Image 1: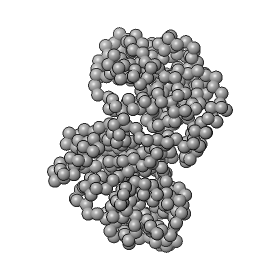
Image 2: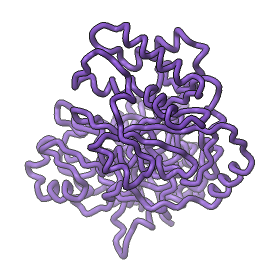
Image 3: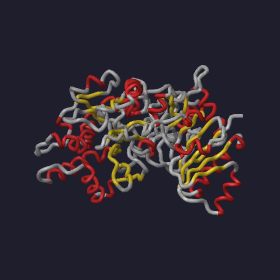
Image 4: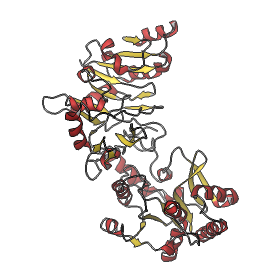
Length: 494
């Protein structure tokens, strides 16, 4: 029988106790498990008794890194799971992880490992995210973030990077010698291990920790035979601090998509929602793809991939404004495109410099809704959606519950009390008054235009009767109120 060694780092045993018992109690074969702990503080007598009740447990103290303690606690187990004290295990997780791993192994080779960002309770969708490269900091350190969630993924997907708090594979991977200061992902590549992002969340998190910045300075020195092929395969240039769209999203296909299979249970659920729901409102969504005089926070290919997720939804009417430079990119994939004109935006006597271009476009969102209303008068609500507001896949035939956010007031989300202006739902009767109020406030300003968030905070304070605010845990999540809630969708956990 295959054995699994679960390794975990924690300040005290008590911090890890809940996760360890969850692993044992939810396992299909608890007898296959053994545990290794790296503790910063010596266990108390009560904690020692809890460890004895748990089963085969070894601990190192003081110790800070489970990866460094593998050889000290390994007793011949076939597989190792690097874990985290925030983990919550699903029923039969052990058998499922082993099966998922076998699907990644090709031929006679078993040189594959699973990794990824596990879903947390506050995440909008219940899916594992790839470990993706975010940026390089001022010191040249590589920073990581959650890539595109593998929602409805058909299988595990190739990954470049490894999450230190969730990595599962053969024990041989963790026991191989490591060069000094060598990142885990480079060691895996050098030793011909294939790294995959798990496609189903067999484990979830109550909380997590940030992946520490990775020191890749000097990677070109002494590791050239490893680094150059890695860079070519995964679209990064360490020496030039360049990241490709694939590396930034963690999806290593040119079109930034992966094979999907929406479960039949989800399809049936969406059909039932559509048959039992009433839709008396007729919203028209509006977005814009405009050229800025300086680089945007994300790469153009990323924005286009997010836009494609939006237009794939059949039950969403969307109009896109694009300037002459971008309209050629948008019109082949989306028929509802109009050329952007300056008169569709906020009219101001102030000179809008390059440094204010993005803020000016943000302030102009209600005015583009107003221009749309003048062209298409039959809609009950006009909805602004940022061009890149949808960062995860949605089933194309999903029923959108517009009744939940199309009210007689302006609906927008707040995150920590701050307005999230990536999506605005404005009833037809308030489009003109909203534009007039914003135009008057901007006209009263001398010099520079007010910042978008500052203006909307004041507007919400002065006109509370206009607004219906929805507190949400993260930005760009108002759209989640339209779709089946996480935990309510079949096969997901809230």
